[in-house]
Length: 360
Image (cartoon, rainbow, N blue to C red):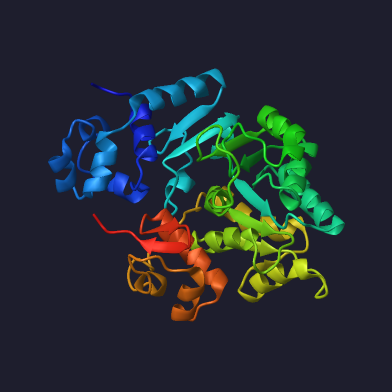
């Protein structure tokens, strides 16, 4: 049976153990429809493990049809990595999402964006700054991208909307799930005047493991990332780290040394982020890329081999604390690296830690 390109890509996205790198490698050898005509020995001959081959062979096509029908009824656009409207800059990051579910103005994905992120437990000053900078970026013709979390994210989205500009919210839930609930009105406004996107299936509820994953999309879509307030150990710093790996600009607003929410910004500034005092500090950096069409992303390929975390992880369950001791890395660095490895289908999170996945 011949399936549509969208159905085939959805099937690949739902296939457990099959990552985007493997998918793209497979599709250099054969077409999408050809892939689903192969038997188990032929799939294994292409380099898939027996388990992944079995998963692919037992694709639940009725579930795929159900997802497509639901999205059509709910006005949810499905963008696959092969869609012409899939954002080019996102394709070039390490581990781009195979599928994006979208509600709102999909054309905004092609517009130049700056991400504004920060603490959920922000100060009043932080909220004012996030709104002010987002307002200024919008008036300058840039789309403001964030994660619709409470605190800085919400203030950034609202600041962009108040300026009559556009904003994109990248969710860690299904694209039709509002989280936190207090942002129902903000969500409705973004759908009407901007765009909401997610790599997770519709109706997916909030999960703590989803939010670090979505951060690579926030940074991947943007020309640069502005950090307003954040502690050292925060999701916002994960977004900033992804931005650096994706060769993006990182901006940080300094604050009082007595304010713990300034520690993350100060740390990034010490690491080379641009100390940001006004909107011009951002515009002078990102406008160069917009006007000269020189914007490009280099994929960070180092870490493929000789990764200390992977070297110290076996096929038995290993805790984060044990990996921290073995690698002598800070715990936040170990956790961030584990996230990368999980996205690359090299490790799997289990009940008491992580295990290494066999390479098929």
